[in-house]
Length: 253
Image 1: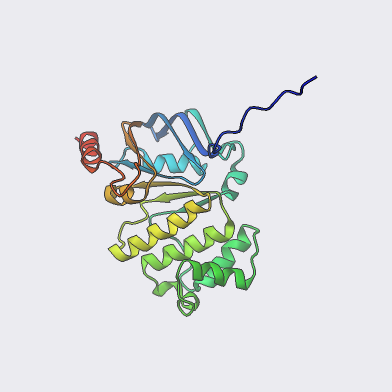
Image 2: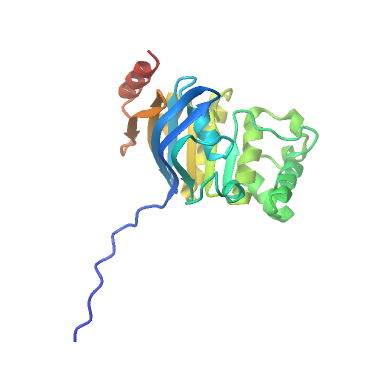
């Protein structure tokens, strides 16, 4: 009797979904903010979420981090619920707020070692030095007090920490605000390296041009819902900037 043949494998398996949000409804106080939000981010993908102030970008991050209980809908990070498995979710998520909070009187090396210890993820001195070198924080700067750092240097320290934690999901809140063009390019390089390692990155931002340069997909949040979504095309002109501007202008009118 002839054995059954398995069907040919797909040329490339679809990447796993790291962030899944479906029909999410959430309030801030008595004010409804998210009204049926649906989006997903795959492993190795950069997703930029645009929207006017009050559109619900930060509320989305708060729900993913377990700081805010949704009223309806579902959300999962690598298959885990922030409401039911909060500690497990926080172990697999790295979060960079607009202003990275570090201990001013400690160096980058000391900050990284301290936060790794808190997470129960000890790393050797050589590993910490290698991660800081990978994000191009100079060895002498890595041993200076963080109180002397620019915003770009603080972000490099936070990215080095994310590398060392090996978190599969990175959440960013307005990461390029206040950065000069050179620091912004360097930050994008770091995110591109993380994407190459399979990290899923959700970035909320007002920086439409920066999103167009880096993101694989761009979503526009308005009225608590995703009203537009664009996918990057091959080649240098990755997005139709006129369409992005038009969609953003319509959402804020």
